[in-house]
Length: 172
Image 1 (cartoon, rainbow, N blue to C red):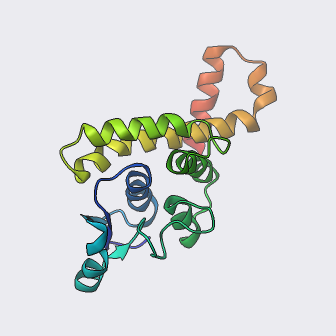
Image 2 (image 1 turned 45 degrees about the vertical axis):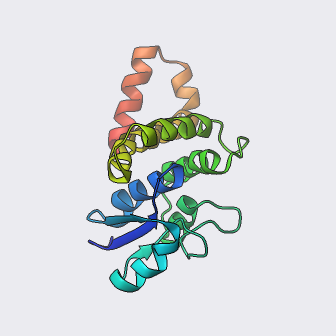
């Protein structure tokens, strides 16, 4: 992990620009500072502050090869957590509209629209969005555990399944 870098992206955050700050703070730079500016100001902010640009046209940590910025950042920083890779599919769908990748992304897109319009600024939006990404990350962990322990879970009642999954979550 790195510490206390500045990161810059376009203002008026939506899916990728709420997901990426969550990803960066959670897995790359816990003390990250974010700057939100009009697209035409990104190069200037990079020159003046040394900030790392993301999710903007033509930047290294932006859309490329059919991937959204969230996926590119995961790739660039060598993150290989299976639940995070599963979450990346949801973010991809929400950001690109490619529903066949992960249908859950439709709900994420709708949720981020609501968060954006119920926040006073981009900082509040990414703060509110963090709990959504925490919840989806846990959902992805549970989804993978259900696949891994499918036969064992099939033999359990609902309460026992919940307890079993909670124990497995704590182990990881």
